[in-house]
Length: 222
Ligand code: DC
Image (cartoon, helix red, strand yellow):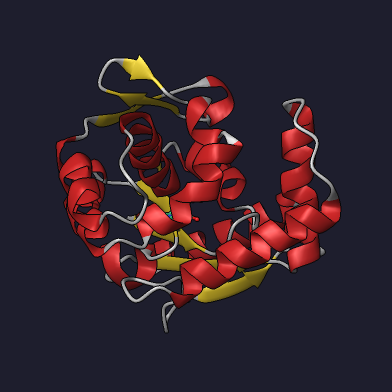
């Protein structure tokens, strides 16, 4: 079974996907990490985030891999080098929307994402999983939450890593990323017509996991 979990930044996709994968013993594929790794490599190689041609080449040749990590959080590799922490830097986060809006990048990464999920039961999170990457996914969830709540979650996550950003700035960054991800021409962030919308603003993590599990269980019974 393929479970597609899409939604904007900070809606809880990776936490929920990881916990669902853990509950069912399935694989978790974090597609944002793939776009982030291409962005990291581009920054390191001095490729402009607007240079679709060069970025497409980079994305096609990049060897991006995952290994199981602590608490179900996958470790991410570019070739043999671990990039798990580096792809979460503010610099990568600030450039990933522009890189991921490039058509050549998305084309190059489409097949990689499909191959990663070829093994069977998988929970895939991203922006275009239910619409473009796996339009036939058996379960499609669109997670949302208010901008204020999503900014608060991201801020707390960064606080935990010793990076302090104020709420107002974080709300601006999140809103800008939403606009960019939803407004791009290729595979914009949007809910698939057959996705189940789950607003997580006032739900606990456990409540969201249970809600998603109910949807999966119902699908498994049919
Ligand atoms: O989920 P995340 O914050 O790690 O994603 C980083 C960026 O990657 C996000 O701003 C948009 C892009 N992305 C995408 O365009 N398509 C995906 N399937 C996943 C992420």
